[in-house]
Amino acid sequence: MPKVICPWGLISDFVTDAFAGYGVPKEDAKICTDVLLESDKRGIESHGCNRFKPIYIDRIVAGIQNPVTNFEILKETPCTAVVDGHDGMGQVIGVKAMQMAIDKAKKYGLGMVAVRNSCHYGIAGYYATMATQQGCIGMTGTNARPSVAPTFGVEGMFGTNPFTIGIPTDEKFDFIFDCATSITQNGKIEYYARIGEDVHPGTIIGLDGEPIEGDAGVALKKIRQGEAALTALGGIGESLGGYKGYGFAMVVELLSAALQDGNYGKALDGKDANGKIMPYHLGHFFIAIDTEHFLGEELTRKKAGEIIRTVRASKKAPGCERIYTAGEKEYEIWKQRENSGVPINEAVQKEINEVRDKLGLGYVFPWEDNYVPAKDEEPASSSIENK
Image (cartoon, helix red, strand yellow):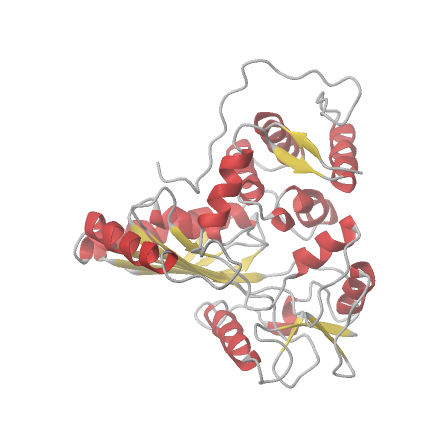
């Protein structure tokens, strides 16, 4: 069944009301919605509406994520801070922590905030973009439930651990490099399972050291049961540089746990010694560097723009029409979707209907026969586009 386009205003209002219906304060609910839908606006569907119910709502209902966020500052200096999120909403924790780092950078040149006891915070690129839009270089990373094997290993020992960097440019979009340190991430495998797509060769390794292929749902179950693991960037072994992805993943793991005395590895599995579900207690880090403390934001944007345009103008491989730089494809997807909405597949449609009916909300969606399009809907906006 084809995806159905849901207008941005409609899905935004619903998701906000749904979060609020499950106990998230309204202003926090707006933050969670903004981060969630920004993923869909950038075409990163694995982290958008696809994860609304199973990753956030279901965890609140299960009691392993707190809808009300207690953002506790454990230690603070002019340039740094350590925060305990007390298993609150990861998006709220992420936005507050990144803004704290930015504020410190604006005053002192550089700011860094380390977070422990958080939950899934959505796409890391959102926080890097917060920094670039305020004239800063932004960096962030997070650890996650163990699902990625180290080089020469077959056991999931650390998460997909994105290491994300944003640099302001004079383009319509900033340079936002946002990706996992594994070849693929759990969200992609979940997404493939939903749409019936097989896993891509070389992205998952079995306990016998051989690649796992075929049905994504089966592969996902094997990962959850410890019978398989995702592979680091570069793939199995060292021949294609798998040790490099492994090394970057370890950097993120260390920065997400060592500075804040946070959990790591198997302790992030979401289950206690008896197999009972428990909070994930994730760690994050946020770094902001203010360009005004160097030679200024205007010059930084201009020079960064020159560099990426020079790269894009270089000689193309036969049969290839374009060279892209980070953030460009996401910007183009946003411009394609700006005046339409978010594409939602059948499985997520059912989840949205389920949440709506459970809360008794009066929403009608485009996949329902009694849907009537709204008139004069306000234009959508996205943080990916330089304002």
